[in-house]
Length: 154
Image 1: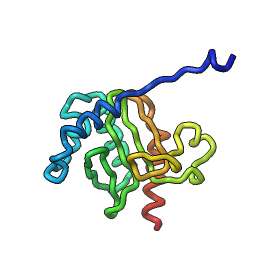
Image 2: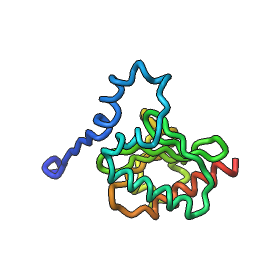
Image 3: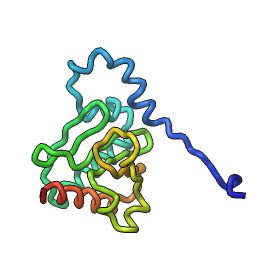
């Protein structure tokens, strides 16, 4: 009975945005100056870019002082040259890694995130979130704020 209710959704966004480009960019890695536009496929992921812009605007609105450093796979948000959050632009939204441990989260927060501490992933944080286009981001802002404050207190 449980197998009848089971469904599997395979998200090919990561393959389209990075793996295909990896083959093309293999020889150009050292020469490339990565930009935020690279993450959003030079304007082909407009909805995700708008979501990213909205997220950055909200993060600045809550008073966090940070810089953005685009890399090949994600955009680092840095405070005092240390990363507290990484964002990857996808066709269907944003994949976000937050530099928190699962123990830092409340029970309600753990229901909205994925623990990636024991698996390979691109970002540096142990918490992975997905922000779909048009979804609420207040809960995500609280996690990013928590990660920022944790970084600044160390």
